[in-house]
Image 1 (cartoon, rainbow, N blue to C red):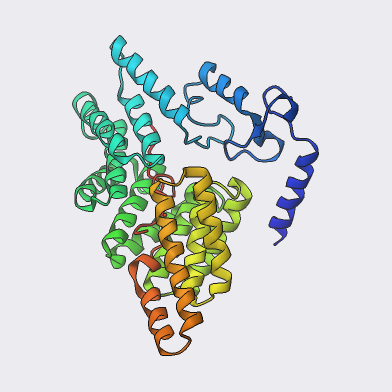
Image 2: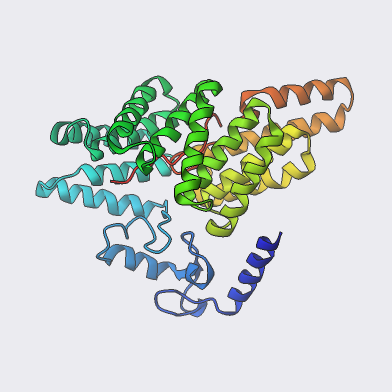
Length: 368
């Protein structure tokens, strides 16, 4: 509660000093937007200032993410600029592997899975041929293709890739390296999606334990692992153990990423789904509504995560109507069905980096 109060006070103070972080102009010079996860006065920028910076900055990553908070913009301009960069590299005969991977990851983040897949496959083919199967860049490409196939629901093809990346990383980097932890979390998420909770749980616990010890409790990767274990415990039916984990992840993400970041929205949804499973529909409803509204704004109406959130909200409304209209035997049956169905128990995944049904949130993108 104190953190939310502090956030409201911060936002109130910003209203008085709302200026562009690049030109220092105010809204008289154009509308101010919040394109990333920066907080305080640094979160405001003119749209035209931001576009000029992204098109002209010498920073390699300026095209698609903020240089301060490292949050991705997830917009059409990111794809345009990365696509032009890839074409220029192809024309000049430069290496394309990293650009292929970056563009594919951006497409995946925006829900364009079919466009991302051939680029991920090309990147992996290039890396296997030029660097070998055990090079860190090759392992990143293996991991990223596995993550995309998982997001598409192709678990059979995703699993051998996830296992290959994890096996080699454990052997070459050790169990506590950040890339190894990414692979541990990814395989755990995949096994969860297959319904093998017994095999998924020790991997989720391992990733969380090491990340808490090495990265701290507030790092985005730690928060993803906190969320993942909470989701898994929810699906096991251990709601009492799951709830404090989901609340912890959400509280810190609201503070550090803001209310409209896809990772925060995933956590909002996940807590709402847990409260629904507990039967606390009054507490669940505002969270599910907030998640859906935020996803519509941040990812668009047709993004897979938004569509999943719409399905979740529809399911919630049906359950609410059943309990209102048929408070006796039929309501009890509807409640049991909603609480036990995989779609209701498994909070949505937000894909790479995080983010809505059938799987745990996981840090899918592996940087190289």
